[in-house]
Length: 179
Image (cartoon, rainbow, N blue to C red):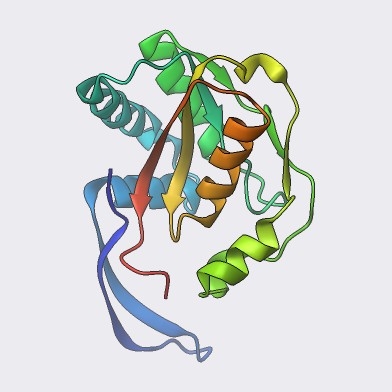
């Protein structure tokens, strides 16, 4: 829907030697940042409203919303499911939170910049747990688009093994580059 970060300027190191940045985010990028990293659930309704307005503007004929599995299972709060559930509630569309599951431990991709390497790492990394997707038009939903490797992998799986009718992809934000 928008870029996550509009600008980020190095402003020096903190007292522990960690680099500090003055970061400007898009409106949806700031809301997502507050939800994901600040655990500020007060922004959830604003994110859901923005996403549902966007989806309504597309005229996509969507039967199911399918969540992309989290890249880090250890994170206590995963933002994708509650956002997807809220979108589904507003639009009257069934949400499948655990239809796609990650079946292979992979390193975080945010520090891997080569697209082909990302695709190699993700190969055979996901499975369809629930055949409910067959014959349906799917909205594949995630919070952040970086290179498209995860979305390509999961979309291909849905088409190949899930026998879905159509796959539409929506992420709230995207990086300006994968670096």
